[in-house]
Length: 239
Length: 239
Image 1 (cartoon, one colour):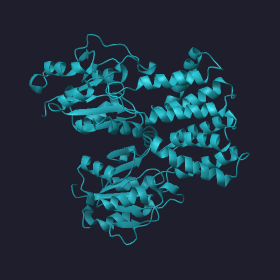
Image 2 (tube, rainbow over the protein chains, first blue to last red):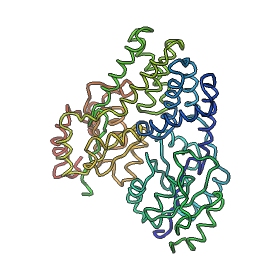
Image 3 (cartoon, rainbow over the protein chains, first blue to last red):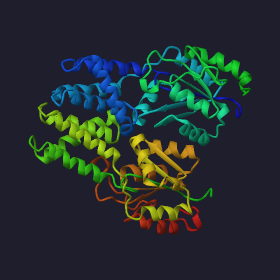
Image 4 (cartoon, each protein chain N blue to C red):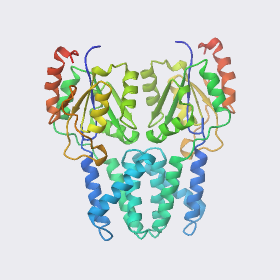
């Protein structure tokens, strides 16, 4: 057990859809504000507001909703009708309450892996919303630990590993974001498995660490078991 | 060490001021909307919206800010100028960025206790905001663990104790909320130390468990060391 790898999974856009709901909401945002500006300009203003507010609000739907409202006021020079702002608020509530839709193969693969390896879920963002999503995903029992952090960087990962007494070389992190799930893990000595999602939030864009000995890109979660078995035959570390 | 009590502290309104900032913001809210309704009616509507949204947004300033915006739209039948809503949004941002003001005696007492007992901080609410406040409080190094949970109930406390391998009878929880810091702790077999704060959010009101053998009310954090020494002479459990 002690030398088995610990398989850690990102949640949003790795286990279940997330960015696509943001994209749908952004689409609704541009439609609601169509009388005031072009969709492209609206999207750009929203992204700018969002980035500026990230340091104040942190990640998550509630901060995003506040940023939509702020952008709507800003882009209309304060002439936006309050009912449009209420509609944006309702979009935010819908996102918070949206059913969790697992990505293809996730349930099967995690159930299979859980019989051989300890699994951990590591997600960033809003504690309340992420806990709700984990609960509604039906996957909670497959994980030996669920960790929700406010930022995924070398410091937060190192702290997490120390707390669980896991050596970095035992950690395999599977996720869709190079910036959050792969690069900091490689930096601290762990294994980074990248499974791209069709949509990537600008903020998560990062260069691919091609050729790194502990990095691999897989095309879907169904490829994880075979890669893990090949990399860690008989369940032990050989890297 | 093993039989020493673990002293856990709530954060908001136990270590630093919090509810008073909400009260100031609520005051500004009633002033901004004074042309539309009486302060009392405004406060009541806001409280109702807040409670209704608690299950969607969870605790914290971002959800509160969204509830202020929703109430303002609601109470004015959608006629509120967008600039008033921007002002509410700015109030929310100010709350997020507000300096952390420690309650009287907190620094001294925690420094003193930290030399004798393991200290833990257990707070509920927004992960990003609470982490920020802990960091800015200057107290982080005094705690062996900082735990931020989405709800403080018997389940979340039990999970936390299990994770840290702490028996309930070793846990002393110090906080201002009977509902969140005291009653669930007594339920699971721990010690509840209540230090009232001058203001209590309606949502946190609960009956005082007078006469409970593991409950005590102290008038301030400066009374904690003497109570702990009396209750656990030579640092061990005798309850």
